[in-house]
Length: 395
Length: 226
Image (cartoon, rainbow over all chains, first blue to last red; front, top):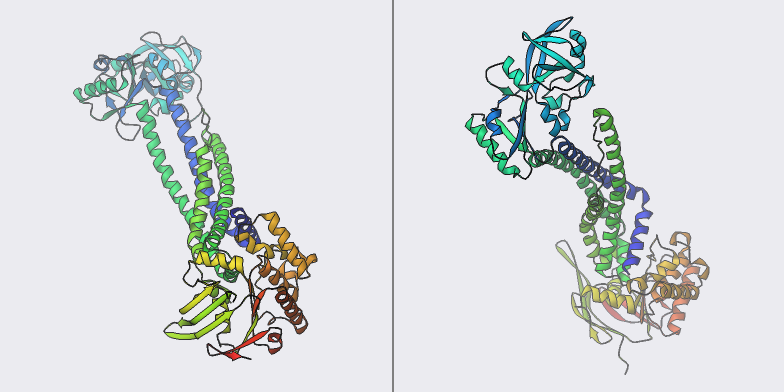
């Protein structure tokens, strides 16, 4: 009999076709918005986590200035940090503005001190050489593509940085505008020069103010213990404005921020589902009113209150479910399209795609059916509890 | 002595319209024996429809007892009343009251749906009854595609589909032209001839004549047999 009631519900919904579709569209839009946002959000989280993992790996700690801003700097005592048990290596990146004299021209350029060793454990910091080779000893310099052009230097030339000679050993591949800078603390790789960290330190004596540092944890050492040790050293050397972040924390932090944004957006989109639900309720109340006599007839021929209740719940649940299913498809379509646009716009290397999880699909369907059924509950109850005589007498 | 099918004892019904209480029935005693064909006549407002609704277990009396086959039923749960109505009582209304979205056949089937009857069996039964009322060729038609007389015949088939003991007809010819009305009355008389118990509410003297007994009502009371 439940099946018969369901068939009857389908026919009733189809019978008032236009109104049913309008109601369904209400649910559809809400579901599509929520699904699209969640799908994009999950995809974003996944690709960011992958990206972070690719850049840092699990055994690397990042020492970075607390709070936002790429200009912030922290004073790092690298020697003391290297003494922390369980630390395999410590590297830092520091950029200063230096006066550079090349074969043809000279000028103020940004000079980055770094450690080639870090390239091994932070993939994103790998410098891409167009000519020559990497730094192997002090007194060598690598030029960004534009810098080389600007000062007219080639591999083998000697350039003067802050009155000291450096031998050019390599020239970097030209980077696309706006790319590759982030990993080096916002500096434009094309316009920079790269020397050993220690050389930079000598050229610019005084407090060692780095953009950030990386700590590599030795195999077998406890990451959290090393992190605590590093924090103790930072506290001892008075570097209070720095914080130490591990891979897990970093991804966790990104997740928290993204999750918050996502929940907020999904919440806003959720309001439209609520509005859709109110639409269902409205349609169902109208249906109960219009079909009052029918309800009376059904009761006269033996329908129980529960049959009437179920019939109307099926009708509203059905509209919810159809709206949810269509909304799911539309939402996933929107998410995929958005992912393509984001890929094109930001040229994300690791690949960014909208996530489609089984949970999302099932959740969306159940939720929309639930919204439909719950929205239909009050109207269905009203229908079920109508006294048969009054229903029959209704004009 | 045979057990009466339905007995009303001292039944009253008071409707409340806001602050005003409107008495519709002021103490009615009525016995309907199996095989009876009773017409209830009276002017509008005399309480005849209310009486029919209470007899059909669609409404509960304000006071008094309703005995179905000897059992007091006026205080039963609504689900149990629905079951009794579905299995034992068939209704024929003035305005036919067919479901507009269902075909003639499906309309006839409807009471069996609520009884949980299997689709094949109930379809067969419904087709039989449509044939009985002369509409074998109208199974697939929607109510909107049928004439008034045909619709009322579908309604009669629906009233018969559960093989009920009692058929209650409320002005069944009220919305029909006189030829169709006569046909419907013939069908009812024929049903009584086959042993069905019928109660017919009407204010049409001609219609009442098909019944074997006629009761007159006035101001919520039965005035007597005509």
